[in-house]
Length: 451
Image (cartoon, rainbow, N blue to C red):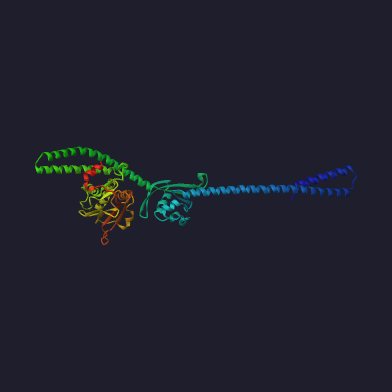
């Protein structure tokens, strides 16, 4: 073990002093040795005191520095941990579904949005392999991860009997800033676009109706002119000739021209129904006229089945709302009954006031609604018809209109449990308080109010 540098310097100084003394004076070796030992001890003492003070100062500095460094290090660790928690909370609270996988495709993150989307709690699958997921998530996510694509759009799946659509996005998690350093996992984002799809389909449907409306308006104008001429000529014949048979025929011609005008105007109104200028719910209209108009329009389809219609509705029963939107409801319900029934079957349409409610029912003896699809009949795009025969928007539109008219809809199917056949749709609306005298209002007057 080496002597401290301070002690070596002290011994050297003492030795040089003793050597100088011995040369300058006549001192015996024994005395000189005693003086040397005494000086050496003194030097050692001085050096020891100096070293002790230096050690204490150094110790205090060292004691202070580690404390400061430790404090700074702890602060940095705390900041990094807070940043990590903040970033993780962002992923957990993100409105998009987030699934994080490690290098072995084990699930490390399954956020709240994905829990709601999949009905799977994160605690149930934490650290599970991706291949352990149940369908439809196994096919959807595993196929996406192994596909090599970073984005997949409009991927459809069915869950709990309902069709949903998602966009999938994928990002690799690198082990370091250097992208060549390999990956330590995968981050998957699931974007539910089902509602957007519904809105887009509704917009497309509205645009088609608007196109039909423009076409119908042009047709109405072109047909209206000759019909007006025919009606005027028939009225002249009726007024100028005394032949009763001729007058009766002229009267029939006038009635048929009025009916033709109503049909054309119904097409125009139906095509424009639901627009802001035609959705005023403050009007009051006769329900019977709306039912008759719906039957008339459906009967124009000669390719459809021939049906019998049994209508029980007093002329004075009225409803508050937009008559053209109610016409849309009846057209959809009667069409569905006709599609589900055999040719020449009877469709019963009934309306009555009970207490302060107006109840309208449409009933058929068709095949009924299977129990497996009963909970899905109001879902947009859902249909049991063949491709091209239905859009799956009919009952969804009915539900939306009835709700907007402050009504309720109830479907009972089958109505005959023994045979499993028959469907009854029951609509309930609030009855208007103050009614006009509807018995004096003819169908022509009602149609003129919609012009």
